[in-house]
Length: 173
Image: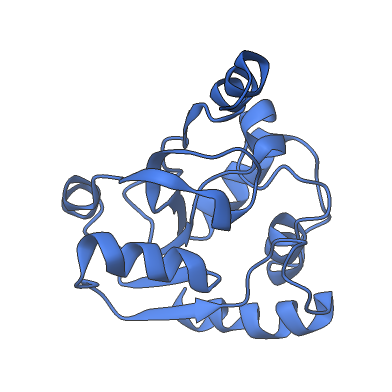
């Protein structure tokens, strides 16, 4: 039987975590979906806040903008280019930042989201895992979609290769 200290440690580390509201407006034409923010992003309350995550670097490079640390300017960059950003999962239990640790996941309300954002015409998945979670919980994807390489530092693909594949977004804006 595990000790009381071990059980308490498991209880403390397996907390329910929640994603953020979407970044979107009435002009959003594409939706980029991740899975669930990692620990750094949750602590900073910002999408893709881990310094080694390539997401924001790719976004600024796509639009020939100098990278910026100000989160409001990052969100504005997306909205100014017709990009919405959200996560497939609304909540889950997870000890680490790894997708493989996700337990008891709960999906976001995509019916309401797509009803409010009818201008969205294409979905991009930030890696294969968000696509798999979407298919698990929703079965049918209502729009054309593309699975891009994950921008996570855990996805061991060279930055330039990620950027080259992410450039396809420009064809949908």
